[in-house]
Amino acid sequence: MWKYIVRRIGESLFILLAISVITFGIAKATPGGPFGFDDPDSGARIPEVMRARYREIYGLDKPVPVQYLNWLTAAMRGDFGVSFGSRNQNVSDIISRTWPISAQLGLIATALALMFGITLGIIAAVNQNTIIDYMTMFISVVGTTIPTFVLAIIAIVLFSVQLRWFPVSGWGSVDRMILPVFVLMLGPMAGVARYTRTSMLEVINLDFVRTAYAKGLTRRVVIMKHVIRNALIPVVTITGPILAGLLTGSFFVETMFTVPGMGGAFISAAATRDYPMIMANTMIYAALIVFLNLGVDLAYGVIDPRIRFD
Amino acid sequence: MENLPTASATQPDAENLKAAPLEKLRAQTSLWQDAFRRLRRNKASMLGLLIIALLIFMGVFADVLAPYDPYKADFASVRQAPSAKHLMGTDKQGRDILSRIIHGARVSLAVGFLSQLLVATVGILAGAMAGYYGGNVDSIIMRLTDVFYAFPTFLFLIILMAAFGRGFINLLVALAFTAWVGLARLVRGQMLQIKQREFIEAARSLGASDARIIGRHLIPNLLGPIIVSFSFGIPGAILAETGLSFLGIGLVPPTPSWGIMLNDGFAVLRSYPHMALFPGIVLALTQLAFLFLGDGLRDALDPRMTHK
Image (cartoon, rainbow over all chains, first blue to last red; front, top):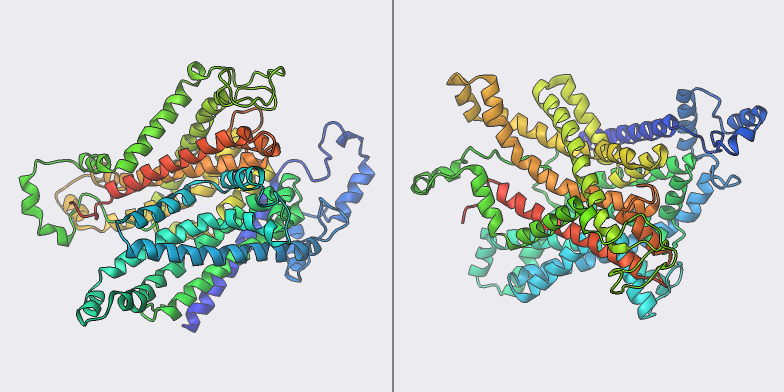
């Protein structure tokens, strides 16, 4: 068990290192720097002395492998350099300001997606092939297929513009949080509902459930005590895909509802080629996903004792 | 879960052997006839197929079907609400939205199909190499797929597009670069699995040549999962394109991309909701159609599914 955990942690660190090399490489391989030196209009007017000074300040005058190692050692200490976009701000400062907001949005959305998704899935499975089942699965299909940004547009037009129930943008008060959370959680919720339903239906047909009925237990007890408990174990495994989905969703939701979080900041950094910001955000996102997947795999073994680690 | 290797198609599993005499009574049908029969019974899939056929028709005959030139600005009629003259209204330059949506179908389908062709080329080649050579080649390719797998796809796409700039070719390359992994793993898994099956050994012992084994046994067995991966890859690529274009890092205006139209419309959503709603609905319908077809194809081509 311990050997397995150590090996998995090692693998995760290797993957993160590889991702940092790839991202850094992409950033360095691209034409055009962040300062617009190559801009045919304004770039030509920047004197060579100033260019050299800029390169020196940002460490761009050294060979790329050295730049990478400098970045890596600084990043280990939590120093991701100075943002190219807003030049008087440290990337770490921007992130420590934006991530609590994204974490709040993400956690609320995850909790609601799991809560409603599991409930819908159970209700659908228990009422298999009835109108309730079809309705639930219809909601789930709609939730899976409508892209987050289209859903956001429909939600804004319907609830903000037509009905005037919620403000269009911002963050902080409950009425401002409802729409972004709703838009962000609908897709993952639909996925959880579909998955829970399938898992429930698989368990419902197993022999031990028939035995439970045969010994005279009521349907209620069988479902609550036997079916749900076993059916929810595989649901744990979709936490990884859910998180990846939430991440993608947060880019759109934060940009569209002007939530001052990491996702929105990352998109503006990407649009302006703010590489220190892009690198820092990428590494945080990747670390989050890699270690969460690791945690899920390990937790799975604890929840389900039938799983053995090699 | 979609990437787990599935059992091969032509070889009956042990539990199916019992049913073999019954199967003989039926007229012999090929795998593809069987699959098509199953697909045709799936109403949702047929609806999906119908919508996709319509989209392809729109894309191919966009020049004839579109009532207006999708690029031609008409500043006398800017941001008009839907009317008899412009069924879906006009955008900020007075361009007809319906015409742009029809031409947008061509753009979306081109992105979907071409990117999947690239993905298939890279994915099948990498997977086949890993599966065929094994050893070091296999471990290097598999380690690489591990890294790509852990890298959230859309995040990776944003980085690539931000770095190399927007545009059609860049987008296709970025899509292929991030999506080949799934297919490579699938092909490798299938190859390893099929290589060891008894029917390959049987074919070999009967004196079948390598070419015959590859042509008659390996490829038909791989084709099903590849088709399924295609049917989920196309809407995935379309979604990525519209998403990136919506964020301003996908295709370049004035391309009639649904994502760019959504971006234009979102800027003035409160006053002119029609500009974003129409392309949004068409995009959602497209996604739905491909999901229905993909689900149906997966069920139809999965040989382990019980024949009812």
